[in-house]
Structures are given as C-alpha cells and as structure tokens.
Image 1 (cartoon, chains in turn red, green):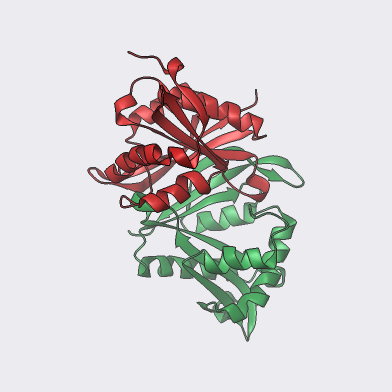
Image 2: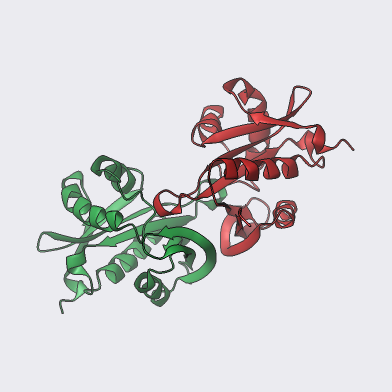
Length: 168
Length: 168
C-alpha cells in the first residue's frame, strides 16, 4: 500500500476546486459524516470550503488531489485561540494515511498561525474510523451531544466534540 | 421585586435595535461571557443578532426592552433538528426572571419551528448564574472544553456545551 509520505500537502488555489469538489460532493451527498446539506451545490461548497475558512489545503500525489482540509478560527473574541479544521479524503485514496498526514500538517499550520488548541465541533459518533484516528492523534472526546445528528441509515445518533491543546 | 411575568416577549423589529444594542454592547464589551469580539461595532452586532439568526425577540415591559434572544439552526444538514439560542438581559433588569422567561419562550418557539433539541455551544464556565439557570431549566452539560475561553480577568477557563431534548 502506498504511503502517505508520498503525498505533498500545499495550500489550495481556486484551480484545485474541481478536484476538491469531486471529493466534497461524494462525501457530502452520502450525508453520514458532515452536517453540510446533502444537496450542497458546487458554488456553495466553494464558499464553505474555500472562502469562509482562513486557509484551505490539498494533499496531492503526482498531480492527483487525494484529500483536502481547511482551518478556521472556531469562535471569535475570547475563543479565538482555538481553531477548527475539517478533512476530506477521496474514496480512492482511503487507507493510505492521508487523513493522518493532513491532521498532523494542520496542527503545524495551527501553531504557525498562533492557535493554542484545535476543536472538532461535530464528529458523528458512527464515523468510528475518524473517532479512532483523532483519538490516536491526541484528540480527547470532551463532549457527547445526544441524538444531535440524523444519520440517513441509523436515525438520530450522537455527535462528539473533540479537542486537543496544541502546546505541551 | 418585579416579576418577569410582567415582561411581554415579542419578535424584534429593526426599530428595536437601538435598545438591543445598548444591552449587546454592555455585555460584549465586558468580554467575559460571549465570544463576540469586545470591539464589535453596532453594524456588526445588527448582522450577528438580527440578520444571521432565524428569529430575534425582545422582552419588554411598558415599552422598555429588558432583554433579547435569538434562535437559529445550529448545524445544517443532518444536524438541522437542533437549534441554538443566545440571550441577553440588561443590567438594570437582572434578577427579575427575564432570562428564565426568555428561555422558556425560546423553547416554545423552537418547538413551533419544528426543532427537536436546543444546544448552547459555548457557555463560559465562570458564568455561574447562567450555568445554574440553564441546569434548572432542564439543560444538561454534555461537554466541557478545557481552556476554550480567554477570560479577561481569570485567564483561560473552560467552556460548556449544554443541551436539552425538547420532546418528552
């Protein structure tokens, strides 16, 4: 299996968005992990993933976009030392460590931008691979919101708040 | 002490915003309970409190605005059955049960709009009066985010996620 080490992570440009949209649309239309509406259009996705966040990145290998992440400030004012990130990996690139590589990269990015902590506001509890991975990468489950997500197959399921303080 | 029962709660109009701004500005400039930037301008406040939310209300007594709250959808997509509210009471009207009256009103509003649950994403843990009140009104603390808020006097303090399922 190809290693994630071969993935190059760099800031995304608008020219990357066709590739990002393929990944975004596949994941969001499935409706089982993100709270974006399943029918989110390409224009709305551009705004949500490329414009609202502070920075957006892609992980690519030989010109193919394998995954993407954004980073933004999670709360303003007295909460602005905490950032929030979202990650998506193409179905073709799963199991190659792309999410791990992006999450580690995002933590470096966060520290570079001056954030002290990273928060995931809404990890769907049935997304067990993600929960396990974030745990492995040092994120603690600091909240469990009962029945906060309407899963298309399982009905109402819990959402988790996960959090990591980035400084030792 | 005057009872909150005397407060009339109704939908806010732009004409109420001067009164709302007095309350908003006093609370936000103090910087110890909300994550709006302390220097939030009146125009920004209008957008945050009157435009972005789905509905905004005022509690008034004999033409004087005592408090205000908004209601909005907390997450899109699979999270859109959960609403979020924010409440502010003027310093002159504290201790009159205005927050209680508004929170109870907001739960009725939420049910009328079809929401199944209400979530407070970021209750500053040192805001003990609020935490106690939300508990009393049936909200559970479902998350504790360590050091997520930079309190102007106490440094980094925890923020709580509070939640109530609105149906029996």
